[in-house]
Image (cartoon, rainbow, N blue to C red):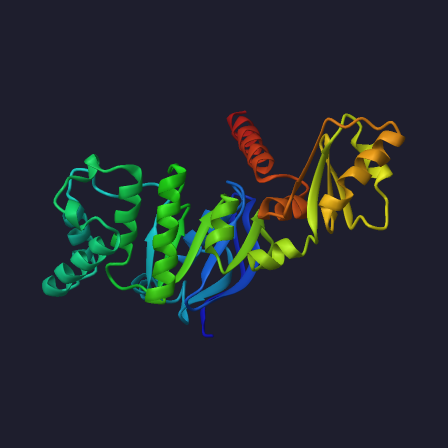
Length: 328
């Protein structure tokens, strides 16, 4: 399959801060590719460079063979983008928002009107085409932004946190649209997200990004299978004692995380009673025990030693400290 995006050693620094650190990967034509990581990990910065909104400090990238620095206009004609922050004009109707976008791309009126109808029908908004956008719900606005981004027939669509702030039902609805676009229109879709389920459900492949670096890249299934077996999470006031007690041949991996011990093993259901008996025999206290199949959250935890929520909290604290230092 042809390569739609080729990224080589892409780096972005802001006043000494490395936001994106030497990332390299390819995205295949027609693929839904996810950049998964906490807020502040470098996802949006990577997307902004690929969309020619930010110039890289070093490295290179091409979109459909077009260099992002040598021919930014060529790249912009090939891509559509839906920003994390809403960019619709709330005082215009849905059709007027679409029409204005089409005029910017110099799409002839007849073709423009035909595409507006087709795309508003695709996202189930054609019956609201003449309604003012400020009367729309968050999910309707997101669907309109996706329709607008597709108006000039881009071959690549960038979606920056496309379902951020939406309720679960609307989020599921939007996932269906995105999957349909890739499947039926053959559009290459690159999305950023910190929702594990979104990456798992939608993406053909996922790149996990943390502190500006790509730490893992594969299909969601392969990433989860790489952890092996089932996951047993054991809560205890003495996690070190739990980890020491579980050095058994049937345990594949043991990791301590705060006051929990995360254990990977096959056929966990068969071993739960054995684990409880073993810990009781050594008088190791247990506060909780749970079993589940590996998730992308487990993958992230395995690679970074922290959950996405903890990494986001760390990033916020780092930014707070940086601002404090700048004031002084």
